[in-house]
Length: 327
Length: 126
Image 1 (cartoon, rainbow over the protein chains, first blue to last red):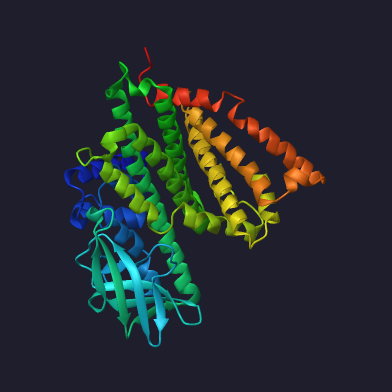
Image 2 (cartoon, helix red, strand yellow):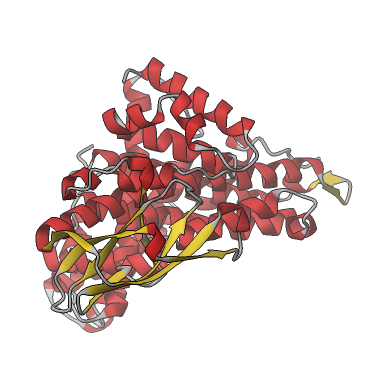
């Protein structure tokens, strides 16, 4: 995709997201060619879609599409839109585990997708080897989790399926799961950066408009430095999220992007909420939607606290700090 | 920075979770700086010089520099403070010098002033 086409797609997705109030349906994404771009040029399509929905504090089934993209590799040939990949609950690596001939599932679905017929579950056999299980959606209990940000439509998935299909085992299962988690982490990093940019815009506007002691509060150095720090942290996280698409070190690069976004989340949230002061705590200002969305996205598939030691372990096992990409 | 971090990674005990978290933290700081300088290099290559934007790079490199040598000091307990080997001398000098990363080339306060005024366009006081 050349730079002009890319700019056009980015414009189309931003306009599309703005037309819906928080939830963008699959059909609307398809109208601008999302699935084609996901298949042909994910390095352009995924950042554009996820950044735009972050910016607008919107959600869509795009994460299901991204996580389902590699399913044909494990021999699952049902339509993409009929299949949803179950995400692990926080601080847990896999949503499934073998129990006798069945599988016990404890995980999450992020965002409603009414067309789901199949649930795909990464899990472990009793001997620790990985497996990819497929169960019918009707065999699972899907419980809505309102939580901090009900607008996303999170569902908790619990099941004890007696006769799951085992789509893949061992290395094949691990390879699929690594690929799937890595692309989801990259997508969420872009989305989180988009939300943070919106939070920073809110705080910046407030710092210009709000006066104290006869001056805009944005003229006080205490405020200026907070927002400058937030801006630098976000710029670093955005650049990292963009860079990791060019890395062959898929797993390490994706963790790096998610940690950078998570750390920027901590800095941007703390400083923008402090600058917004009272209005940052009221429901009459839209800021709280963005704050809640950022915290939720941060939590999914590992935040900085979860992933930082993992990255350290990776470096120690290699005895080196890989470059990820050559400049 | 990458070289020193790699050396630290080769010396850390795999079972020391505190050190693993420190290493991971410094690594992400270095990668964020690399990612950012990659963006800047592309602008420069395209003849698109953006003076104030480089203040972001400066804030990030200072933070990466200090994170790496803090990690070397903390993840390799006693090396900087107590040991007399050549390696310890090297890490000691680097750690001490990294304290100046937020000072030389325009202090981090100056960089933040530039970002606030020229990138965020915050109003100046009267």
